[in-house]
Image (cartoon, rainbow, N blue to C red; front, top):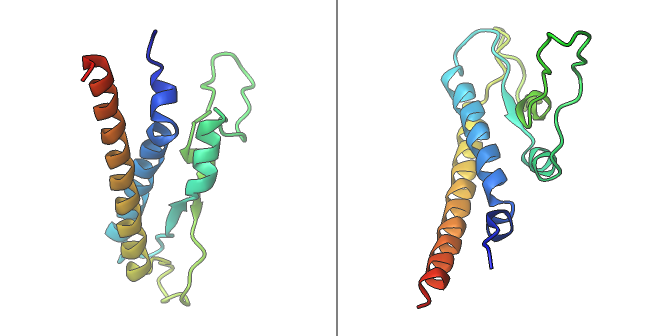
Length: 133
């Protein structure tokens, strides 16, 4: 009997990938909180995870020549969107609200840690089964 890791780990492998990319996006927002003209971005986690689960790639770029890159990405190109600002423009074109970004970053970090904990439990269970304990 073989072990199917995709079935054993479920969606958590894809969830970790999306959460990791979302962390990078949110960290960029925080780092550019004082950069004039910077527009806050975020990744729609649910949509990105659904795309990852169904193996969807980003639409939008069409190859017109075989020598062109496909332009398909599993996550970032379509799911990374500009955030609708909750505060009026400060005059320099920057739409980053540091409090919103920090809260989103903390929430994403908790979700990431939850996925890691779940995967760790699954791996321990598999090791127990393999060892016959």
